[in-house]
Length: 401
Image 1 (cartoon, rainbow, N blue to C red):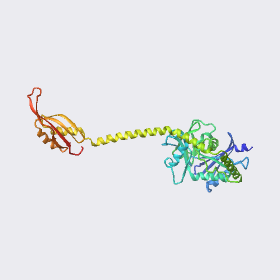
Image 2 (cartoon, helix red, strand yellow; image 1 turned 180 degrees about the horizontal axis):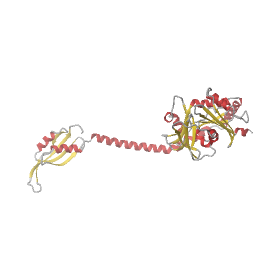
Image 3 (cartoon, rainbow, N blue to C red; image 1 turned 180 degrees about the vertical axis):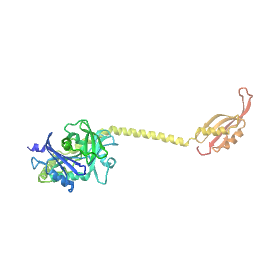
């Protein structure tokens, strides 16, 4: 008899009517069988915790000293339910949930009221679903459960569990009306894959029995397995004499276990830490190798940048020498470095060559190095002519082009 009472689960769904009032529906289930149903429009003149607590006091109870378990589904007007983009590529839902809670304003809208982020349903690397709701609303739900002396086990978005409450779920989307707005939820194997809010006011339609209690029935069936959920801080359990006795018994048992099996907790923690370090070891090695490669590439790019900043384009050097050469002159050899250069030329007049090069603003320190010799140069079908072979050294006087 006690096991049968404890096996009863109650699903409660909160939503809004077209005029903004809060509607609530509830079903009591035992296994796959629905035992009773309730629905009501909460009194708008009362706080949510008071009105909801009064509604929960009407729930049937098999044994007065057994606290019924209650799971609550929040309609789309109370919850921001969405696929979360831009998450780090982590497969651990706890780490992802912590990252989303730290940067909640990046993923969810805020209107000045503190929000609470739910757990995440991770479908793959950087692919997850999550939800957020106002923190005072969760506090009101917990307070209502304490007033009604029921055990709050979880709070979930309606869109996450709606398919489980439909008697004959299909692959077709489920249309849900909440607060005068229309929402379309698409599921695959009773898992939410798409949620869309249709713009514009929805046409009022009479609710069928199939959908009237679908949210309450869905959360009653999936209260344990749905990851997109908020777990209550105190489970909504009233503190009475029986609860205190159980707490003292649990405390004594914990002390006995801690004394008999010392070090179990530290051993488990060390084992978990070892497994975690072993799992991230390949990522650490990869990060170190990537950092080394980046250092090598950065050093090479730095050398290239310094060289490009100091070098002078060869075209400008050749242009200056070419403009300074007298007619019928030729460059035999040219060697250029970062400071200047040296070239050997055959020219009719070495002095005129030096004079013309001195007029170039980009060339300075013009001087003849080595002896000036005369050579006879012959060409096809032309008489031999006397040219002077001269070696000239120059430096870069002007700024770099």
